[in-house]
Length: 337
Image (tube, rainbow, N blue to C red; front, side, top):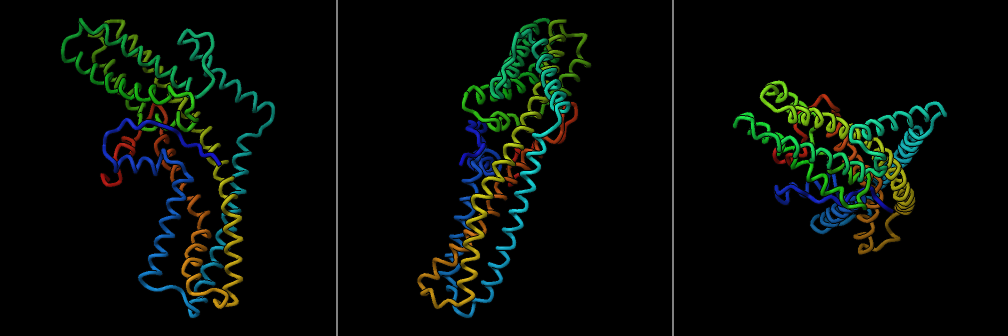
C-alpha cells in the first residue's frame, strides 16, 4: 500500500520540534502517522490496565456499549468512503465537450509558457515542469542583478534583498524537485511555504516606486519575473487538484482495508462479550481488550491522518495570485502560535 508522501529535504534549521510538526502535518507517510496514533492508544490502554486494573465481569455492559458504538461509527465511515469515491470519480468523468474544454485550457496554459520561454516543448511531468519554471525564474533574477551597477545604493539594496529572498525559495524548490522519483505531492509540498502573491506585490511595488531609477533591463526582468511567478502559482494550484484527487482515492482504499477488519473484530468481540468473559482468562483479557479497541478505532486514525494533511495543504494554498493571506502557518510551529 503506497502513500503519496514525498521525499522532500527539509531546508529549515528550526530544530526538531518544527521538523516533527512538519512530518506529522505535511511530509510524513499517512499510514505511518495512523500507525503511530494507534500505537499510542494501545500503550495508553495497557497503561490504564496496569495502573488501574483490567476489565472484569462487572464491566461487560460498558464494553458492549463501546463496541456497539464503534460498529456503528465504522459503518458510517464506510458510507463516507463511498461518498469520497463518488467525488473522485465525478472529477474524472465528463462529456466529450467538457473533456475537450479541459484539455484545450491546459494546452493553452502550456503553450503560453512555451511561448514566453521560447521552448519547443515544455516537460509533462510535474517535477520537470516545476523545475523548468523555477530554473527560469532564477535566471531572470540573475539577469536583474547583473544590471544594478548604475543604481544607487538604497534602491539597489532594496531590490537585492527582495530578489535574494525569493532566490533562496526558488533554489530550495529546484533542489527538491531535481530528484526524478519525487511524487506529485512531493513536487507540491516544496512549494507550500512559498507566498508568490506577496512576492509579486513586492516586485510590483518596487517597479512602481523605483522603476525610473532602474535600467530598462532590470524593469523588463522584473516584469518577466512577475509573469513567471503567476505561471508557477497556476502550476501549483493544478498540482494541488491532482494531489487532492489522488489523496482522496488513497484514503478511500486504505479506509476499506482497515474498515472491514475493524468491523469484523468489533462484531466478534461484541458477540463474545455478550455471552460473558468466562471464555477469556484474566491474562487474555489484559491483552485482548486494548488490542480490540485499537483495531476498532483504526479507521478513525487513518481518516484523521489523511484529513490532517488535506486540511493543511488546503490552508496553505487557499489564496491564489494576485491575492494573498497572512504568512503561511508552516513558518511557525504550534508552540509559536
